[in-house]
Length: 153
Image 1 (cartoon, rainbow, N blue to C red):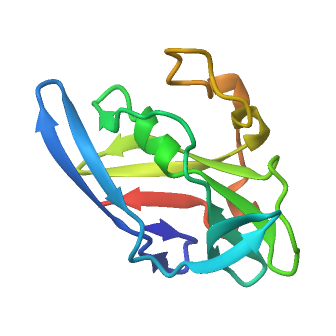
Image 2: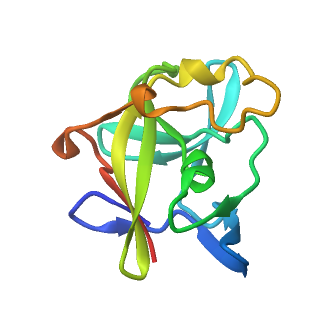
């Protein structure tokens, strides 16, 4: 679920399968209240807010889709978005939304960070599965965005 403090929006389902020291996961964003948009010559599925739209950006490179207590990165990469003004025609890749996840009891909570998605325009080096680093993401003011938290329950 993604929330804005006033309520929650269910955006998909996720299932985890324990496999030793990690869990494989499958994510399905098909049930969410997404609408189809054609932005900057590409199709996007967007959550429409009053002033901003949150458009899902499928991670374009290889992911193992595995997480562990100390590493939730693959799931963070599967939950990338770009925000745009509700009346804007296109998208700007520097308006990236990255939810940095942490374990909170029996759920995962993602705090909104901003990033320039342009760094994903070029494929990472062979074997490099984690091109986004801590220096690439910046914590955002929660009140400055429509959907400041992501919760997986």
